[in-house]
Length: 382
Image (cartoon, rainbow, N blue to C red; front, side, top):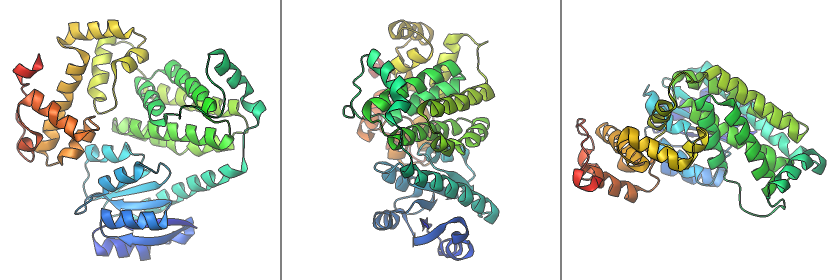
């Protein structure tokens, strides 16, 4: 049985979910219930659940803060978000942390059971992982390519940056570029097998890259959400592949179908595509070099091109978009540290500095207030 932890500040919902749902029918047992995020974090550490059903709005540490804290050390725990707020933009933050499902209250029993059935299937696939390993022959060809490229092929070295690879794949998918997606998958294969050659590590790494990328894709729009969710459920199929090349072929097939399903904006001038891309992805770890690679530009030339279009360098343009969006979020009542994360600043102190530079005041001065027109602090723009 897989362990599940139920987290909700409403006693009726906690007890209702615990007693009314036939958890064992889907391979689960309730390991505990919690009334808030802090209590849930303690129980998570004590019980190590495979699934957590979490309410977003709770006093103290809310559901999003709880998930953010757990994701610092655990990428494998599965989450179902419960919310009484039908706000897609609020759900985007949860999707970015690889949440399996977002269900509105009052909870539809059939919808919840369908999600439990799906997650149980994913957990079963993951559990089978220990029974399969790549042979050296399966990945010999790729290792040969990695050696020719000058990469170290031992089982030690720099750790694989799953988040970085997932971000690149997400960007390529959102652009509708199947060639770039294929290139990123091949690069990921070289990086992963450079670090570790076991089947368990390789399959798990690719499953994480795909899941993170598809969850981020889900947050772009309702259309993206529907398509991404269609393929997220297919990620466990990677574990059935008996050869490394077979797994790569499976991933390439998936990414090709996704990019074809989304289409692209090839009839739009490239510079407009790039500016739109920045507007859409300001909350990500966006770098000029990454954008240049995606659009096949020299980064120095792209920087000059962007400045000729916007009148400012890339970092200033990105900061301006982030600060403008943060003002909207602060006005809606969101906490300062949540806003900082949402708009792409990992460090809240750094966010404070940037915010004051562009507005001349602090983020808290905008919190919960009606939206004001964004005017940069001219003295600090230079």
